[in-house]
Image 1 (tube, rainbow, N blue to C red):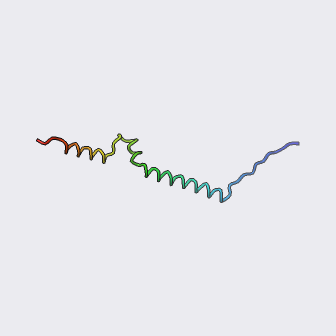
Image 2 (image 1 turned 180 degrees about the horizontal axis):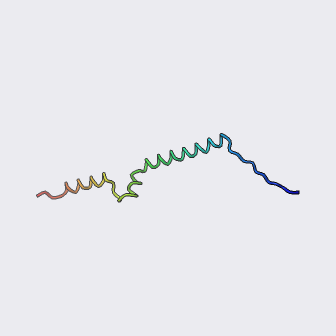
Length: 68
């Protein structure tokens, strides 16, 4: 006697819909997290100082310089 093991598997509409929701939700969550931490991400990959901070530092340095 020979035995054939056959496995029948399928994804119904409910499973496909759940997988699609997981993927869309994951992308949405990643986008929100990126938006919340954008300054930290930009500072990590940049020169370590935001352009706004550099501008404020330069203006403060000019104001602190002695005037002759």
